[in-house]
Length: 223
Image 1 (cartoon, rainbow, N blue to C red):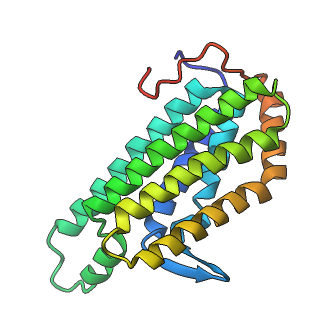
Image 2: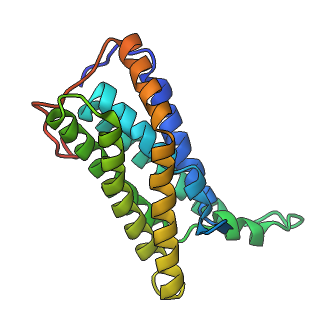
């Protein structure tokens, strides 16, 4: 797709990628917040789906696809950098190696889980939203964002927790984490619906675009 003069697309892309990278690091901690038990990345990660919704709603699936692939590449780069730094010899007077490995010493399994869950969840989210926008003739944005999140976050959550922690955490805790993650993420999406409405409307006015994916090829690997 040729370059576009859109003023805010780069800012949305940078915000999207930042949320992904920070969420991946924060996910190394399992925490309890009220009735919910989940990895720390869940605090911020729902914002990536809100950004994904806005990208598809305003700019269309094809441009959202490019941003998703950008996030995919940056996740791999960050993961490889953390693993490489952890494997390099520590300075003799530096005593933080164990702490570094605990927080940033990502195992190939965690990396694979994160990448697989991200890829499937984000593309499904964008696909469902784009299709629903056509089906609803651009009405009921709340229905599109929440429905796409129910699908995308559901697949994302189950894949990540199952691939990353199956055989490591007890099945009961796995089920608790999956349910808590899913309910919390969808709840955040619903809570932020007014913000999504405002931001999507702002971008449509400022960018002069409200894309409908009527003739779009939805293959994730299409350039």
